[in-house]
Length: 425
Ligand code: GLV
Ligand code: MN
Ligand code: MN
Image 1: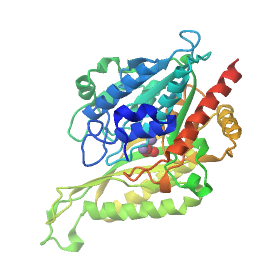
Image 2: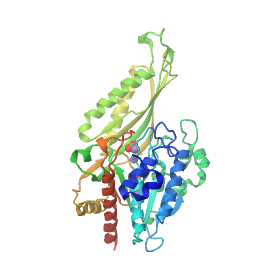
Image 3: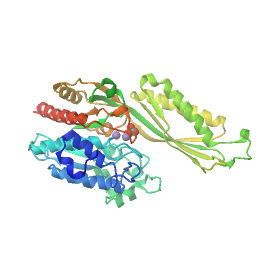
Image 4: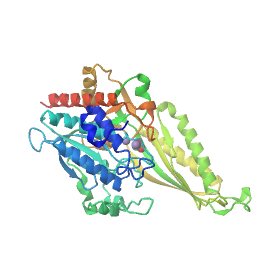
């Protein structure tokens, strides 16, 4: 039974975080009523910012929207202007998303600050809650734009401004329509000395915690990612009159490439490596026309960056051979290169101590999914807390989280804050 906006205040902090994610599962927080899709700089993103802003202000935070649409709520410490513990995650989603990927981390951070504000507790550091606007890369062909910019990892803002969505809208124009100034984008970068530490809570998006019968886990590190767009160029032709031996079929070529990619990744599965073709389009796209052009995505991940790069080299060479044999042209465009991001051992140790105090085993696990934390690790020590999700299912509307697990997450995060206070005293 879903909770109405007006009733959430009576819920426990974890249940409130889950209920807020549920509220964000529908319009106006979703672009369509048929499924949850909330992409960067859409009206659904504006609606999410408006509600979060209200909740942040109510919890005694001052609120700013940075030049790339990251919403920042600052809960001041005992000394104004002190460096901040940044608690963040993203509020954009994939298409036809679950309600908790990203949003839960933001709502759990909000619940923590609500607890501190209710107790009128101030810490020697500020706490900033950040709702990143683009983590998934589901609108423009680049992911983690918000967190990478905040961490100073984007040097070429002209290329970011020129990114186009599937309707041909440039990111610079989308920012302007959102009320932001594209010329100020570089102002998103933060001075590293203003960030004491970064903490992100996130659903696990995998099955390990459930298999261990555990609500929470401490993340050891985030896998390295490479993303490419692969374009095949053959010759469009008549499906009835072109003999099979004389075709340059760009779609059949992509199909053979996809199965080879899957097989090569399977061979590295023991090392935790994965590769995915999650999106493909064929042109002109008619039943009676041989495809002349096909474009597909290729996402390759491994905890070991060298293994990831070796897999990418072998996959590109294999795809090039397949295309040559089929007399089809192929081009690779690299869209993303995220290095592996180990979590900070000392900061993760504070999370483990927090779980220990709660009588929970400090179970450690790696993250195959990408997170804003990977970018923030460039400017601050970073730790991540994973929360069990039903069946390990994510990037799927069936995502589910037990509010009791979310309550444990809020408790662990508050204990982590206590320990951070003790360690900075
Ligand atoms: C984000 O969810 C990613 O891991 O691609
Ligand atoms: Mn995701
Ligand atoms: Mn996520």
